[in-house]
Length: 176
Figure (cartoon, rainbow, N blue to C red):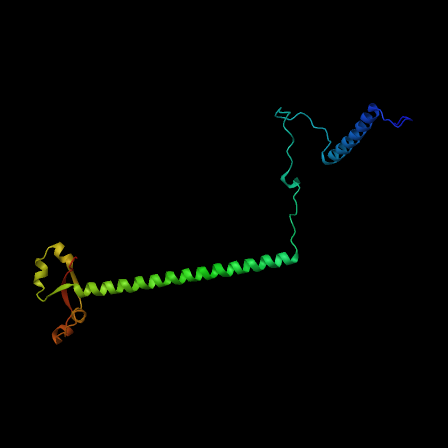
């Protein structure tokens, strides 16, 4: 309300603000009451009246999230494809390195076994009666071998007698 002199009273200004606040509050309560279930609740069985009623998990409102434009999706797809290609190439190189290491290990083991055979000190036992007299520990050291292999390992020319016969060989490996 305005006086004829053009001056507003303080009470009038406060009343207008109160009515505006009341309008805002009533709008808020209307929107809240729409969301809330207004069915009356009885006393809970547990007796804990301060606890609120639990709602189902499915009733929780879920947002759809940020939608990307088609161009952004294409860029993201291209980046993911590039990253996948890089990771595949890295995996392939690692696999190749692993395979090379395995091959080297196989070759080293083979070479080691050949060298071990070359360095063996062998003794051909022609008299089998000696075997009967040997102790168990000595018998464990005895292995059956083809003498042609031993001769080839030492790069000697084997005699015809050694080629024809498979004999028992005493093996003493030099430990270094």
